[in-house]
Image 1 (cartoon, rainbow, N blue to C red):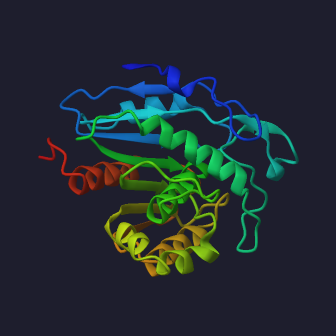
Image 2 (image 1 turned 180 degrees about the vertical axis):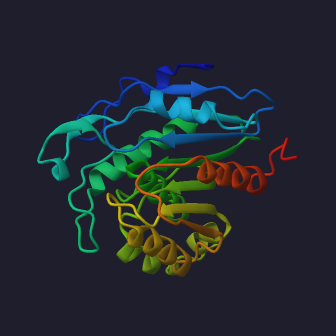
Length: 255
């Protein structure tokens, strides 16, 4: 497998002092046209992400697969595991860990900062990784993190599998208040997929996230339901992602 340790993703600490784990890189087998950061779910790591990305027929994409910090997680009763941010019960009235979200979104953006100027940039992930991906999409559109610091990356594509949108209640008002935010939101390519039998992140949250993004001005949002699918991925779903990335990013080798 063509991945290697990426030193820029090792040893970095977020605002609470949690250290991000090892970052794995899957090099493109063809012409380098895009770089995407892929984010694992709760309790997983960048190694398993890199193995999944290596299996996809996307020879023009470089994949960067970081590992989240090990930290206490409220939904697990304070048990420690790899997590991009703290999360309790996923509900419409749930509290968002904005400090954790911003710290991880900043770390992820930093992984993309040194990519060549002619390479298209994107972020994707599964479950909690999808949540960070969608949060990053809102930071890109607004031009800033929740802290107010500038968001440095020109995102072109966001992929969210079996996830949800943090901060969904306020995003529409924030986007509508800024012409530049509305312009950025309208051009960003987003795909969300979700299984109707998901018992970890219920299907309605994926559907609600897609609807909220659309109403907030993210006009290029695509939502793909998968009948009977639980909280995992299947080849048909990943094939859909491959096709979507190839066409939306204009990658070579689509035929």
